[in-house]
Length: 272
Image (cartoon, rainbow, N blue to C red; front, side, top):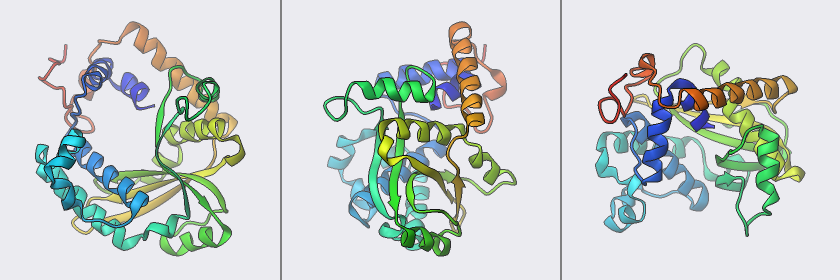
């Protein structure tokens, strides 16, 4: 859904981002880079347990995943390492129940899944093409769900949940509401339900880590999409498609410095 969000924000940025990705170029602001590192650490943590991120400084590791090269932005790397270490102290690996998927891309491609999964996912979400990357999918028993009241301060029922990790600068007045109404997470749940109809999501957990000097944490419980949510999502995609058809290369100059300076500013875009 990030591509469509980018289209609505700035057509040119969406176009340049897509071109860069096709060339295997992974850019982004320092803030985005820290988030990329942080997500990679957490994926490894939930896949195989605690580890020292410094092992990824090994040159063989960098060659295998050049977009995770810490030397491209050491400040971002250090922020991600500090937040990751704080996260693993606060939340043990088994705290989120039984893992159902890590960095799961939907719809899955054959032979992993039937070709019909793409049709089902796109129909459920309401747009084609559509892909999404789920950070973590989990299954919680009643006991595990109850434990989250102690570890994360949330009260939820047992079931299947999508977990989305976010690295944020600071907690803002509308942080909770922003994630509660997240179109991204609503779309992810629709996609998950279409791909796994026998494991329908009971909700999503936005797991926020604030990159303060002493990292802080917040988990927002996002309920399953309602018919109203689906209508909002359909309206959003309708507008994004219109913009893609008529204003794909249009630069939105009001987005050059908000919320952060665009990584393409004066590097492929002159604002007009």
